[in-house]
Amino acid sequence: MSYDVIVLGLGAMGSAAAQHLAQRSKRVLGIEQFTSPHDKGSSHGASRMIRQAYSESPAYIPLVLRAYELWGKLEQDTGQRLLNITGGLILGSSDGALVTRGIAAAEQHGINYRVYKPHEIRERFPAIRPLESDIAVHEERAGYLFPEECIRAQLKVAAQHGAELHFEEKIQSWTADASGVRVTTNRAAYEAERLVITAGPWANESLREFFPLKVTRQVMAWIQPAGGIEPFLADHFPVFLSESSDGRPLGYGFPAIDGPLGGVKAAVHGSNIECTPETIDREIHESDVLNVFNNLKSRFPALGAGRSLRAQTCLYTMTPDEHFVIGRHPEFEPVSIACGFSGHGFKFAQVVGEILADLATFGTTSHPIELFSPLRFRSNQH
Ligand SMILES: Cc1cc2nc3c(=O)[nH]c(=O)nc-3n(C[C@H](O)[C@H](O)[C@H](O)COP(=O)(O)OP(=O)(O)OC[C@H]3O[C@@H](n4cnc5c(N)ncnc54)[C@H](O)[C@@H]3O)c2cc1C
Image 1 (cartoon, rainbow, N blue to C red):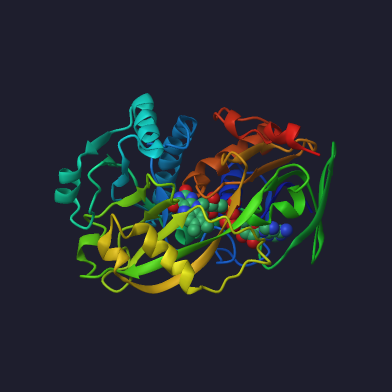
Image 2 (tube, helix red, strand yellow):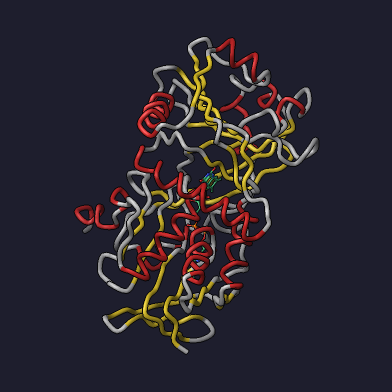
């Protein structure tokens, strides 16, 4: 049998693409090397932040607003809770890059936000001890997604609309020409009119010569705060980004979403330990957890003095400019790609699925994706 579209990889982006394509009545074959969700790629760990005052670039804001709509629709379609709005804080010095860019992005796109001074931060969020030079940008509509549930929901809707989903099957090679694509796996060969590549940290296996993608090891830690979990519970504690003014990498974290014994998940954005999904050291070392504690202890003393309950590794797939790669393949017309999500892609999965369905159906999309052009790295090649 021949398909309209084959989707390579059914993680966050691939399962969303399969869902949107199937909802458009395309004959979809999704192929995943493991089961999905799983904990070997980039989409595990129980929570992913979603926020609108996007300091990375205002260009993301129309996309994230559409993602909110689509996550809401997916919740309705499946009757599952995928998103929890808790509010979100960007904490940092008033002239910090993240804080100022977050405010500028919110102003430009009319995103509701409020700025707290140090005494207001202490009053509203007693678990936070701001520095005297700090401000906090509070965004009401920020919160977190449940990534594993999101992926399950995307796969469920894809299957309900007729997508054929193969698990424990690895795509070993593919070819493409004007007549379509041929894909070979460890089990069989398949043909389709189009191929969508959403391989996450495995993207270098088939795209290495086109994009400079760097895969890095990240660590998430679940911390039992000193003095108890109460100040961190999700009905009054927000998701947060914490920017230092002394060059330390960005710390971030979530409310305690698993009740009194589940801890507070926190991490440091920006470890540069390069690896591949095969070579990553998945063991947790004392230094991994200390890194998280040390990063957070000045503004979150109860976390800094807390106890690590558990920790887990995860993978970022970084581009040089930390913006995504989404578009048509530079050389093979029937192939679209979405990769290089640089540690901030999950919240967009629903809209990326819609964009990939547009690209595979019409060859183009009305969503603003110029920033993500696969062609922007061309001059870097060879
Ligand atoms: C610690 C950490 C924290 C993060 N926090 C946030 C956050 O708060 N907010 C946010 O928006 N983003 C966050 N991100 C980023 C976000 O999670 C990722 O950008 C996103 O999950 C990437 O999805 P993906 O589909 O590209 O990759 P994945 O979900 O890893 O999917 C790729 C899939 O392709 C499959 N595959 C690959 N090659 C093949 C093949 N040849 N054959 C078959 N299957 C194949 C893989 O098995 C995998 O399932 C975080 C990431 C990490 C690691």
